[in-house]
Length: 148
Image (cartoon, rainbow, N blue to C red; front, side):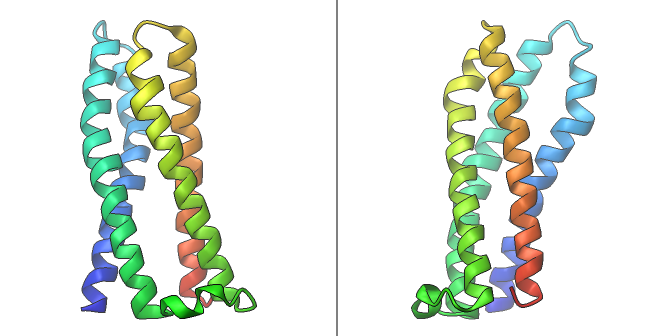
């Protein structure tokens, strides 16, 4: 069971981070040249928000909790002298930040980005920040695989 939970966690992380990388490196350069640029970004953003933010991040949280249970147990989360636990707490903190940035991006700046260059620029900045934070989570996950 624990292998299945870890597998699902990795697939969901791939969907989240891979989706953002696809948006930045493939979709955005193509869509920026289209006359329906704003509408295209809104539609793709809504779909990715549903599958990425709502779906992936929610399930990543649940599978992450199960992984904590299987790998270290909840009782050892308070032992910050352990390098594994310390890295895990950093990963959880960055994850909470990603959730916050995602919600602000998806619920406030994203929808208003069509009518305002300020909101469009903020949506871009928050999207890029989210990508960097998500890559940091992947790095911390790799670090955990090597003991913390």
